[in-house]
Image (cartoon, rainbow, N blue to C red):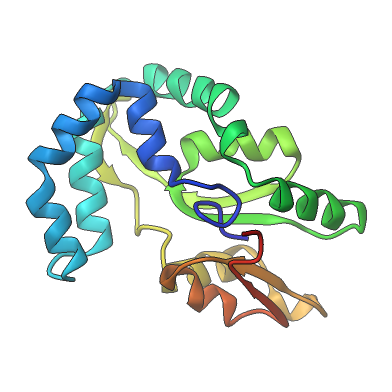
Amino acid sequence: MDFDGTITTKDSLLKFIQYAKGKPAFYTGFLLYSPLLVAYKLKIISNQTAKEMILNHFFGNMPLSEFEEICKKFSDEVLPALIRPKAAREIEHLKANGADIVIVSASAENWLKYYCQKIGVKWIASKLQFNDKESFIGKLNGKNCYGEEKINRIKEMYDLSEYQEIYCYGDSEGDKPMLSLATAAFYKPFR
């Protein structure tokens, strides 16, 4: 099940940056990087390159302990208001029926994991890279968990042949490869 836009009403990365840095810094940063965003939209640069540049701008050299503290607070204080009620009900329904639920997201696992732990589901997400001094170096650790990478990461963790039914939920082009794994695929199901 995808997170941003499927379970949530808004992109959690953007809301996280606003929460962590405040709206003036958020808008200033995105104005500064607007050519980068245009290049991404025109497919001149990759999703991963754009994400790393934005993350580096806002969080480069931030200590892991400080970053994790912000992630935990964001997960407690902001994420609940972004969750679509229909998505929350579907997760509870699936859990009640004994399904293995995994949220698969391009968002950083640093804030996603707190939400997933709270609702009792597993997660697969983008990982951030920290140096030996435990400061964020502005890069992803591996590939952005987007598009085909969602399939790769799911297959690393699960032998899909062990499941008779696989339900997948998504809302964007980046989710379509994951939706192809499903015996039942749901596109924009909670709107």
